Length: 315
Image 1 (cartoon, rainbow, N blue to C red):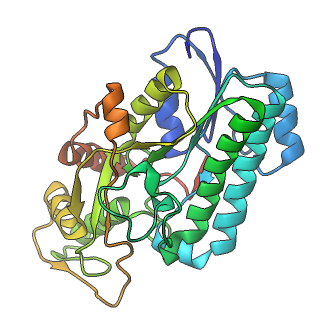
Image 2 (cartoon, helix red, strand yellow; image 1 turned 135 degrees about the vertical axis):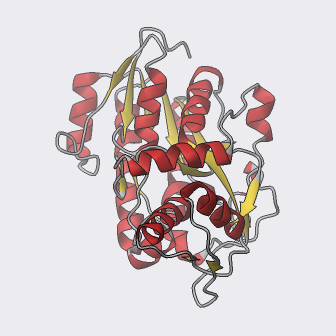
Image 3 (tube, helix red, strand yellow; image 1 turned 90 degrees about the horizontal axis):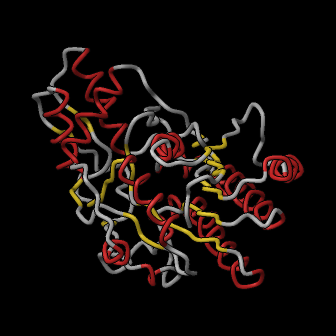
């Protein structure tokens, strides 16, 4: 798809991913369409259909979602399942009715089985049980992938899906009750230092391995996919490297300037033992990430200190 001259709707433009996409698309010769929750409720089917009929976007990126970490997923399962199902179903169906030229749906690496072979290839989807602590969010995202495939098969639409790995970046959510592991560690380390403490407590044993990608790298990959990819299978988008949570905590402590010990808490859940995605398909297309983890954490900590925190609904 050529983006020049096109009207591209970013559903969820105020979230971390959506705002990164808006920044990245600013380098393209296109018009970016946005609609905040104060003007468009994506869970209102009639409102979404009406907006699409008026604005007639040429392309759509579904970056809007209710997001959160283990605690939030485990505490609010109905919200994570219902809200995400409604958002994706309404936007995808409205794009179909309007005969939108292209749609890109964003999933999550949690769609894969808890004990999927590592690194995780796209074909691992639906080959085993999910991680129980975030299965509600995962099921909603799997449904979004299948919706895109179904509309593609039945109606011939160019609807595609991408599966980002664990993300971080400007505007992340630092609410300790609902955030993901990296922003939570940054906030805890920052507040510990402010209190004059030296140690950093973390959930679990610190042994699980996780892959992280800066959201600006993701945005660049998504623009690349909009331009070059048109097929039914979803595409993994990752950095192709992982670290243990303990190693991540050490890195955060060095960036923040905390010089104590990491205090593990084995009474808290670890979640999936390892989650590294195989991004070979995307790499073979010619795209590469450019932001290293240490470099990214330093930039994100500066953003946090500047007071740029996000919300629990990515959009």
